[in-house]
Image (cartoon, rainbow, N blue to C red; front, top):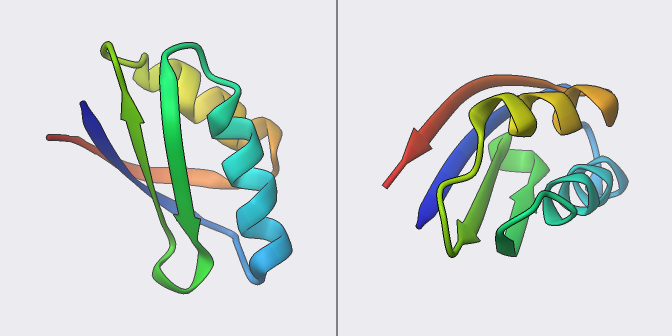
Length: 71
């Protein structure tokens, strides 16, 4: 599964890495790529990932999720 997450609050590569580390730790995520210039993350997972879990880990990392799209 591919999930695209729009994230507010990232301003540099260090921020993107913090968000990427948080998302990578979510159960089921096998790949994660975060781009702060696009305010977006793309995660790939074997199974559906809880939107609430995504929002929680991003919030805990200091950012805000504004949109989640599952493809």
